[in-house]
Image (tube, rainbow, N blue to C red; front, top):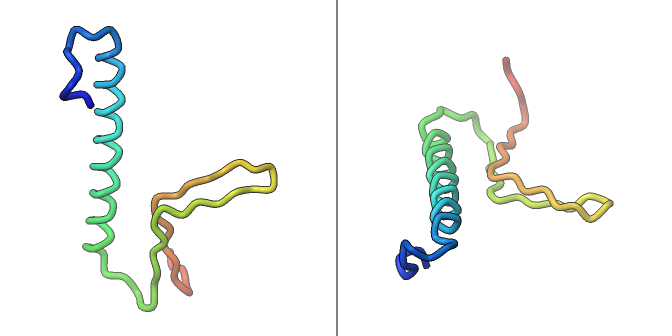
Length: 74
């Protein structure tokens, strides 16, 4: 959409900033996913991506990545 808007459009800066934030967030998620691949992980382990839950008040909570394994070490 930003490519089709003229830069003189009164809301252009808002849309441009919103797009930059989305791109930065996506790049950050990709970087974290790449970091997980470089870590030597114990077996078995599981990843839950884009996990979303709803509490008893109806509020949603979204987590990008959850790492699960049967043990924990310092």
